[in-house]
Image: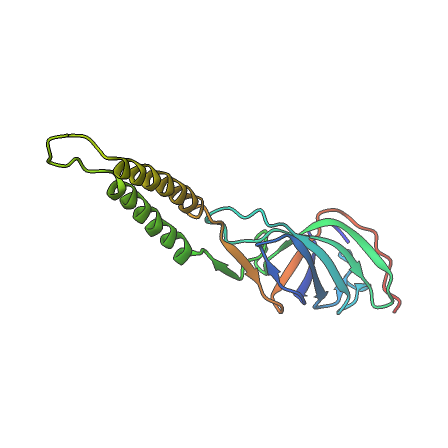
Amino acid sequence: MKAGAIIPGVMESGINSDLPGIIKARVRENVYDTATGQYLLIPKDSMLIGSYDNGVEMGQERVLIAWNRIIYPDASSLDLGSMPGADQGGYAGVSDQANNHYVRTFGNALLLSIFSAGVQLSQPQQRGDTRGGYDAQQIIAGSLGQQMGQLGAEYARKGLNVAPTLEVRPGYRFTIMVTKDMIIPPWQG
């Protein structure tokens, strides 16, 4: 099998980019040698084992997959050495569903605004009396309001930088891009 060949697959397990994980799939069509197309090298329904990472950035909609092994129906296996997965169009990675967490992000922005307003409102206002200063209650309330507001704002600010959750459902069709020449004996099954 020459570099550039394609191994078609279908997902058996799903992907959720919140955590890295192992995935399982099946070869969806028989794969023949690239020289003549006569010799069956990988039979349909052979198991594929791979992995994916959770390093997803803002705006990203594709999950990168590395396929590590093919397990044949007779339980023998072939090491693929982390060959990349692609969609049916040959684009690197796979894309199915993306949750950009807009409600969470805009909720945190609203929360940040509320905390900022709370800090301003908690600050003591000078009275129109003859003393011209602040009493102890005003100073304590102002300081407490400022500290709580800063803590809340810091928490809300962290929530603004939420990476999207990318999901790929079982049944998703993909391809494995063969990146190196491989000598595979014909399947004798």
